[in-house]
Amino acid sequence: MSCFLCGKHRPRAMLKSKKLLGKSQPVCAPSCKELEEQLTAAKA
Image 1 (cartoon, rainbow, N blue to C red):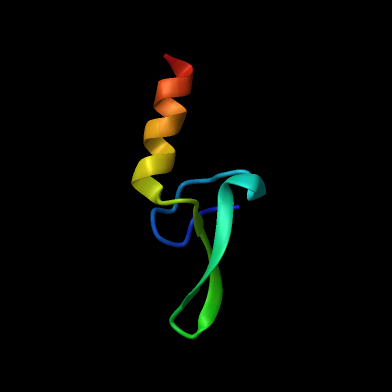
Image 2: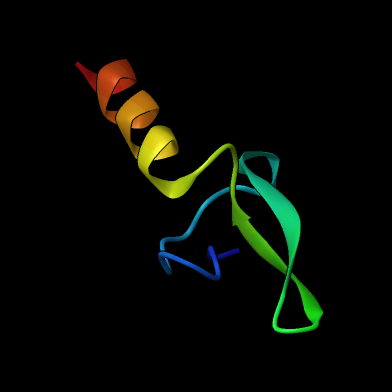
């Protein structure tokens, strides 16, 4: 699935539902920036 905020594809385990614009949308957990930092640190 893709994050509603950043648009990047992530596994469901890395997403959480957040109510945006009156609907529950999948977003990165805990946040787009923190998740990206964790993934790049894991690759290095």
